[in-house]
Length: 143
Image (tube, rainbow, N blue to C red):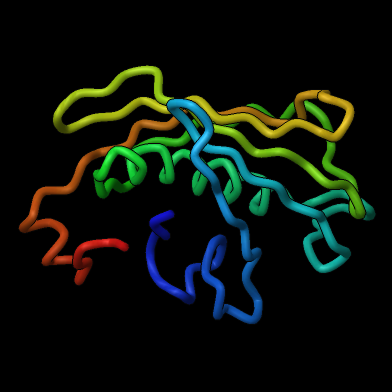
């Protein structure tokens, strides 16, 4: 499976000592990953910080085009926070494309608890980078 970004990516980087270390697997036309919330992910007492939730949804959305061999950046990310994610909770993160064109992907993502209850969802607009844009950002071919 290809990895997004680099080894120090906050969400998926294996070598980031402060990262979330999420691994996304292909699941049909989308991706799925799992995350266990720890005390250092808190915002409010015993509740995962919304920025962590947002990062999980954004990263899942970015892995969808990666599976299609595309490198994208997030142009828009609209999030609905529905239920708190509690410290100690294990959640499932999944994302699927809703529209694919040569320069744009629309991706829906959601986070659910172990009981299947939806905790948060997002709609992302992912812009496909041109070769020049990848070079400008210092992004080579992802493996």
